[in-house]
Image: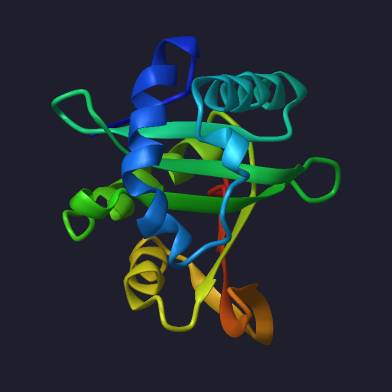
Length: 176
């Protein structure tokens, strides 16, 4: 499994992935605009992802399996540099690929990029209280829960609680 930044060569495969998983994702997160689910919509999203990298405000990656298929997406958003060096982690794994370790490995690889190449010091993430699989993925990758917000996420007219997590870059070891 590997993480690959989305580019124009991924548009058709990414559109197919999003269409295949649309109902699955929209059962637990708010829907993307209908215009996203067309080649032009995905093309614009890829262009925006590339612009975010250039502006150092976000980094998106496709989760690619050993057969070179897109099985998920993972990203760092809301990057704050001065005084914070932080970002927010988000990820989604396609329905057919859940429970196979892709989320955990993708988070592990993304943290290595976040604390290495992207020079971040703190990553935040959250999940709904009822999303035990996501909670386990975060905890197994060194995230610690620091909060619980009540009725903080609305989906389909229903309010949900969220758990808030953080992970810090490994502390530099003093030179002896």
